[in-house]
Image (tube, rainbow, N blue to C red; front, side, top):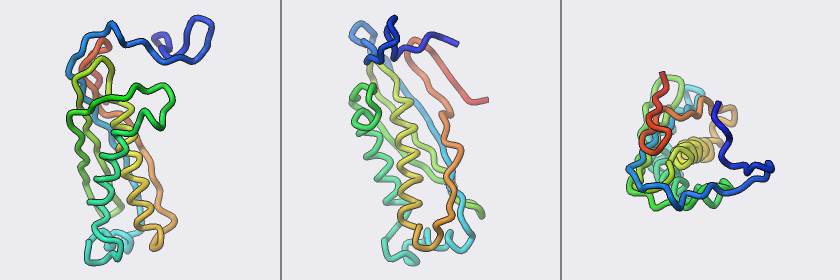
Amino acid sequence: MSELTHFNPRGDAHMVDIGDKAATRRRAVASGRINMQPATLAHLAPEQNKKGDVLAVARLAGIMASKRTSDLIPLCHPLALSHVSIEFDVDEAGVRAWATVETIGATGVEMEALTAVTVTLLTIYDMLKAADKGMVMSSVQLEEKSGGRSGEFRRG
């Protein structure tokens, strides 16, 4: 395992200095899942939910969250994101969400993708909790990343 970069030689937490790193195209994809009762899935249809289109609201929440990651995670750098997208796959047990985040910069966007997908799932939970408080969010994970010194990662 490589050395942890958010600690200095004394073990103190610090923000990584990216001042000398080259700006390159960075991309990260994260996914996560929320499982729910079959009856709850029916509320995903906009006409079935008084709060509106659940997935549209969740998509916007995920996009907005990705842009605020540095406000939530103490040592993340604020980034100018060039692209964020949230996609969904609905099946009989729930919803899987994918967040894709891109930038051209000196540091990666893995945390932004993970934040986006997590807030997307939390928003689905919030909008449907009146129908099903037993929903379970799980499997939030980095699927792939590209760009930067550490190179490519793709979940096998």
